[in-house]
Length: 277
Image 1 (tube, rainbow, N blue to C red):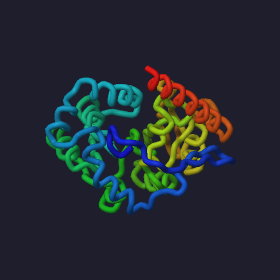
Image 2 (cartoon, rainbow, N blue to C red; image 1 turned 30 degrees about the horizontal axis):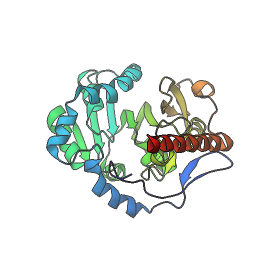
Image 3 (cartoon, helix red, strand yellow; image 1 turned 60 degrees about the horizontal axis):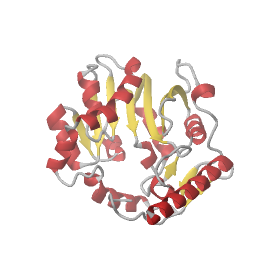
Image 4 (tube, one colour; image 1 turned 135 degrees about the horizontal axis):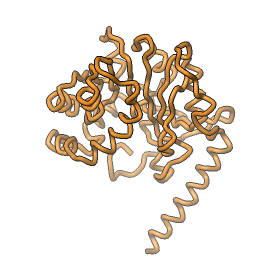
């Protein structure tokens, strides 16, 4: 869905028989996504205007749900003077916590005009209004920590993006990534596989992609099974590699196929019960 309350768009997701990766096929062109995001960004949180966005920014619920689990998970990598880049900062709660709670030097990237402006005004955070590609063209700085909280699944070129992010890291720098878990999701199947998510990751494919791009998992969040959250670092860094203990090896072709088929049956039964009642 591109707007809340609308019917799902029809498109095809396929599963690779070799590795279990789920991806759209055929996929929209990059120019199509640019047009979609130009229309979609300012209303992606249900914010149709500045006043509504400002009200949602100030709610205690959004601050707690969107920030506390993440900055508590990352506190060992945060200290005064550390440089943090929050990619896709949204309401800016994480950026604000890193800046004021830990004394980090924070910059952010956010495509939404409304949210970029509000985060600058309310939190005093430096925000680049645009996409990551635009930021990379104009940036000459490096950072200790990159944040991609529910951003990475929007990339149509994940391998290229992971390679580009190496250029943003200072020596010893790390990346926090969080994506929806295609092996455990609560939403109906037709609503989980989002048109704006060209790839959907399981624990297995998430791990394998990270390794393929020259990174290793150094910390994994096992408490939120509907999301895959991990801190990754260069494979050549001094951090201990916990790959073997990061996640269970779930998410191969047969496993994902069975899980989705089971969810479709559950969705159909729930839909029938809803009609009867």
